[in-house]
Image 1 (cartoon, rainbow, N blue to C red):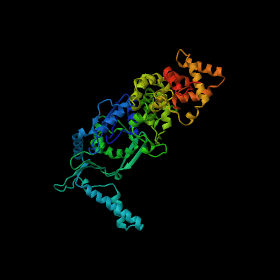
Image 2: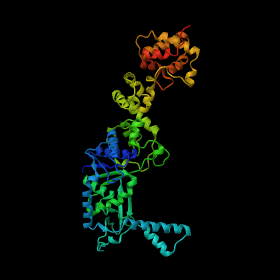
Image 3: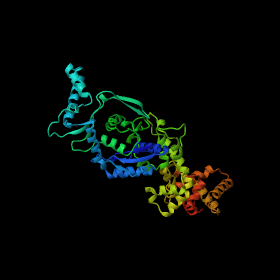
Image 4: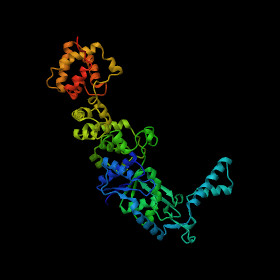
Length: 485
């Protein structure tokens, strides 16, 4: 059997980080088993689905390296096939035409709610009201599920799935274990609306079957849907896929991840926060799956080790500090040209001059080892692009005493003799200056850093001087050095 997995987002919004993790698990399992990873866009909700959302989802998946092995399937293009299966289920007695309207069903819910409120207010109900309330709260069973009952002439009907009358439905899930539910506790869902359009529940099953999906990996918020969808497989005599329902990602406080915890969309992690795709894959993998105590796991290792049975049953918690740690590892490993290209695409980089960008390109090896993400990279590169004179404020301004200005002037003369303007030669010149003047680097280093960087995050001072270049470094020092007698 060839393993086939799928990721099937609804294009009603952005690609959520939880969806990205599900896609990663599907992609990894297919790769681990030598199978196929497919994409399906579940765009049956025409009012909420947008092309912009489709484009954003595919863009996010491609950035993560999780593009499908075949072109994405648009669920909306398969409506005729979905309807065909619904009518076949009717022929097989596994579904039926039902004239009960949405208004009638709402009336049932309203009556049940009224009886519940009455019980809460009065403390109890009469035997007849109690029996009625209990009946209304049970999953709906239409009187027309008796397939011999004639339909009202001319009445619009939906096609409704017919649940078995007795027995239990058992699901063996790779994460949730073996779980059973009585058929009597499952609602008989609508497969075709009265206008002939298919519902999501039907479309998912038909598409998974027709695409040859063997393993469905999705969030555990869909676990109940599995019990509702399996009878469609049974009604058609189709083999059902294996399931793995993974817990949702929680925020650091243990509550369901939401905007209040920070970034939830994949494009925010790329664009606003500056993470690398390989780091995101590594980090998302560890949100709900583990291999011993390993934190840094390459794609090749993940493919070799990954299996559905190692998925965790408990929800994972998002930890930005750990994500930064993982991303810092991958930034340090990244090719300098690639990292510079990624940074160059950011808004703060596009507004710089060629000279400023050139300085930063030279500084990439030094900057990347000190940056947890591209936002930090930009911050640590800022001293290379600041305009003169460097603005000193607070503690930095307080350092600029008359004595400090005099030392800057003397240091300028000492550094003028450095012919090879490189970090090693500059470091020697700084050491010699301190020795000759009987002072420690602590007497000149802070003020030198202040006038060169304004106190911004920056590497060691000798490297700062080298990266700025002789002319720019001397100009910045000269702006604050004592001149004249």
